[in-house]
Image (cartoon, rainbow, N blue to C red; front, top):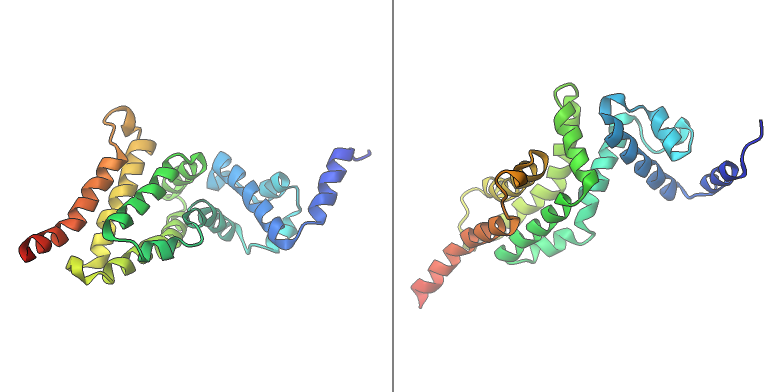
Length: 216
């Protein structure tokens, strides 16, 4: 049996790829397979077939299935923040901080792959609790800790607990995303993310406004 020219060309191209582009190729394939079949039904053999590589190639980049799933989480969350996300956050005013968070959540609401990832994590976390741990550890360490650090460095806000305020701001926006998109709340009780952001921004700036009024 002869190999078709198209398939040979794909294999030749794959063989000449750099390790970095090969890793990206595997992650892109894994996103398709994991989000289509779910965590339980996905095997590295299926990912290898989709990526047009052998399983050994996957193992040369990822230790196991969990590590590959973590790479998917990073690809669909952390990397979408942008290279200078932390710098922009730390240099923002409290209002700007809220609207940067809003913009990130708004983009995720429109990302079908990210919404499918959330469904997979939530839907299979009972059978595979490591999925929830992977998601929380990956996203929290990269996003929420940055936000907590931001609030800690703004004493003028007189925040008693920076971690708690981070949960209020970040948690409110994530709850909005889950309620509106995953639970179809937008079809029953639609809520504008801008209104939520405006309310949070107003709460953060209220103390500063009161101080200005007293001084004047």
